[in-house]
Amino acid sequence: MNVGGLLPRQARSRGDRIAVVCGDDRLTWRDLETRVNRLTNALHALGLRKGDKLAYVLPNAVEVLEVILAGARMGYVLVPLSPLLRASALESLLQDSDTAAIVVCPEILPELEHVRDALPGIRANGFIQLGGSTALGYMDYHEMVRGAPDAAPPAVEISDDDLFNIVYSSGTTGLPKGIVHTHYIRANYCTHFASTFRMTPESVVIHAGSLVFNGAFVTLLPWLFLGATYVLQKRFNAAEFVALVERERATHMILVPSQILAIMNAPAFGAKSFTSVEMLCTVGAPLHIEHKERLIATLPNVFYELYGLTEGVITILDRHDVAAKAKSVGCSQPFFEMRVVDEQGNDTRPGEVGEIIGRGPLLMPGYYKRPDLTAQAVRNGWMHSGDMGYLDEDGYLYLVDRMKDLIVSGGVNVYPRDIEEVVVAHPAVQEAAVFGIPNEKWGEAPLAAVVLKAGESVSPEELRAWINSRVGARFQQVCEVAIKTEFPRNAAGKTLKRVMRDEYWAGRTVQI
Image (tube, rainbow, N blue to C red; front, side, top):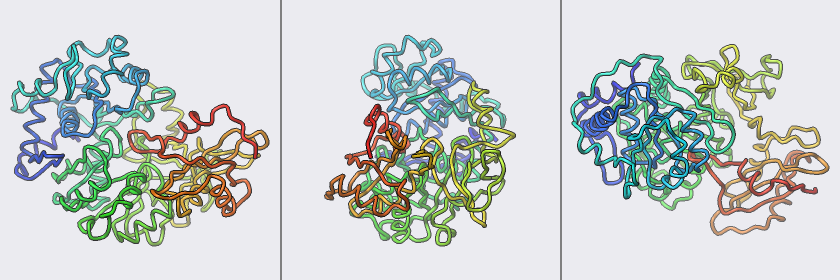
């Protein structure tokens, strides 16, 4: 189960087929192997060996794929980190991961320089810069690989249990929590998602999200496994993405809801420009039913929804189940088990809300160096998600909300997603995020932050009245509406409710 052996295989058997399209680059599998060989030989010459941690803080580029494939080939443990990290978080995660070498983009240098002296674990020649004028003491990525041989690197024995990567669930606040994946787990990504999404060696995967986001591996590893074609957009732009889908005849894509909304609002979006598409999967956060129904009406029989944790709990709504189960996030997959349990750990009845737990071949062995957190999350072999939901009679899962996003108002549990489904139905609203803020009478009360559609206008007061006349119960009424130009997001494109809560409402007590 050595993921590193896949690239040499594709270079031998599919060497002249296009492997990667990124900007002006069009690389065959043989081209890609040559470039990865040079990088692996260069890193080996620096003294990097199997088990060493190799971090990368990079925007989307062919070189990110090279780093990932070099790590897989040589047994380096990959540590993907977001270019949005600030100095303190960068220091914390690099120290926690025991990083020995790091590849960075010029944009992150000011942050890294603030903490460089506090990173003794990174070897002196382990600071590698991709692009821009090379800073003092940094190795130039392209100069480094240019002088390296393109022959196969030294052979490395890699087993199922060898670490593939450490993915951090959060890099901005709180204690570091590094999710460990082994080669065995990543090999299961290859086969499981290739099968689930009906991918073949002739598939054309298109990707626009950050490659540091774990969701990227859902289509990246099947691409590698099958020897398909991977079209990588350097920076997401909805209009360019639609044009790229049509030009490259893309068949498979995985997107977060904010990207889907932007694409649906692009002028050229429609059935004609997406005729080649066989799979469009949403991931990272629930896609509100209002947007889901619009997408399915435009592009029938291609929509999938993946609910999952990087730790290894997943369900998938298959394109053939959408008509009957549109409001669900699908069911557990072959070789996976999923349950919904109450506070005592007992299985809930159909329709009864509880915590989602699961286990299967993608389950992490644990959090890096945190047996305490691992023991809290994985109990008796079951990963406890912290997400709330319920099952129907057929075993399909319906998400309610995150435990940590739950609003307790006057002793009543208020689920933000229920309110958000109402808010996004307003004709002027593009996105909504509901969260709790302090309230003298009720303890907490819901606040609705919204982003309006281009050219639309509505006052917060009008919108609040509209929402409160349509929610199902008085305790779901919002105390305030905040209209914003955009939401803060992480590298994966997920809306950061806690940032809005902390930044704009900390210390406030709202009357209702």
